[in-house]
Image 1 (spheres, helix red, strand yellow):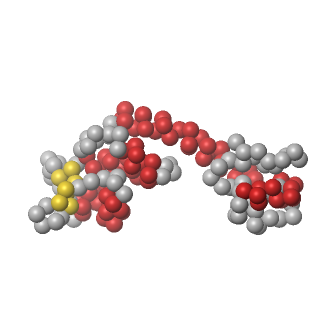
Image 2 (tube, rainbow, N blue to C red; image 1 turned 135 degrees about the vertical axis):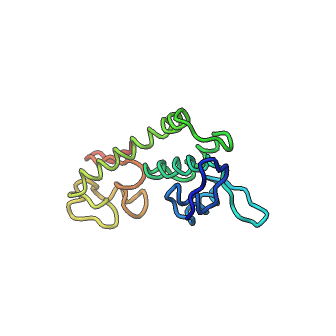
Length: 164
């Protein structure tokens, strides 16, 4: 692939892929999801402005820390079109995600700590789970693993279960 000159204002999808390290199919997916945008040439080829490189990097980093694509799209929609996200933008947007990340960290730490003794309190109960989920109280919330679901559930005490 031929590298785009430093002063090129627009990149082809191949150049964007090469520069960002993201597969062309992923770039098409990002575009379909409204995370990036392109214009079409007379020959119907995509052309991306250079600021798209920073947006792709922003998307990849946010994905890497577990932010859903819908949330990333909503965050990018708060930025002006065709402007590279700045350090200030990233600080503002990442601060909004901090609480969600803290919850996820707590959930993962609990999962790590309970991994030996618990397999999720649900349809795969071990006889030992009767201590943590007596009378299958968590089963009332629905099928499947309850203690490792997306919401935080504290282990059951003798007086019953409570959610955080």
